[in-house]
Length: 279
Ligand SMILES: C[S@@+](CC[C@H](N)C(=O)[O-])C[C@H]1O[C@@H](n2cnc3c(N)ncnc32)[C@H](O)[C@@H]1O
View 1 (cartoon, protein in one colour):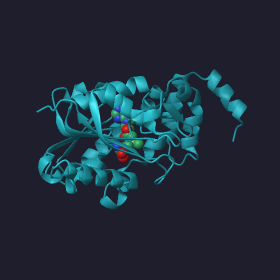
View 2: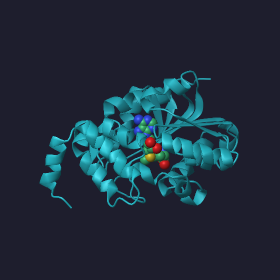
View 3: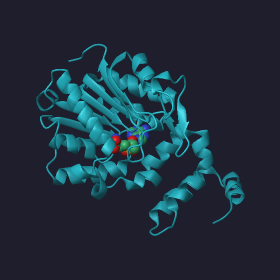
View 4: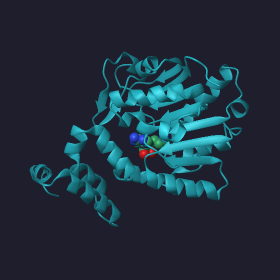
């Protein structure tokens, strides 16, 4: 393995555009050892200088952490991540406490950052079996293509499209949804860029907006005066409560579990009602 000074020198000498091409190539070649690590090393300066651009680049090219999103390992109720199982149990309780029957009253669902559509499929087969509109968008075109092929093959009603969460009007400008879901996604945007996404989601929610983010391990996220950065992957730990308030939404129920890890992730869920009911 070449030393860290040599790698830093390589980053100074080789332009970023060339290193991005190298990262794509490295990930296309079969059997390259440590390619996740190499991808990160090639782009370390990019991650520091432009975190949004860095994460967008990795997801939209299905690189590094995106690689683990494939049909075989994501679809199926026994493969749903434990934090998402918790999220949907909370959702079930929340809806019932609101006097709603999930399978009867939730007819339309929109997921931001749906990847292959495995969460929507899980909801379609279970909690939200009455929904006739299940729409997911994601920047990862490879995941959308393979997820769509799988879903068509099993006769699912889930529909997926490629879209950047920064431009949701392109796919659903005039549509409103009983339920909008955004789990593990806003952490890839700086706070200034996450806010307009929260604004959009609140505006397009009829009944409940469900957001799952990274919990700050030491302080309740709603007390954060600025977003923190998770060391391990440069993702953001936001004060989503404040973003929801700025968007005109109302947090009706929340779960913040601090440092507790469930399968490698901390727990911070918000269930949000739009200030004004639409539709
Ligand atoms: C950690 S995965 C979470 C997937 C799924 N929501 C879940 O909870 O299992 C993050 C997802 O967000 C998507 N994503 C990241 N940046 C995005 C962007 N700018 N626009 C749309 N999707 C994005 C990624 O492609 C990826 O599918």
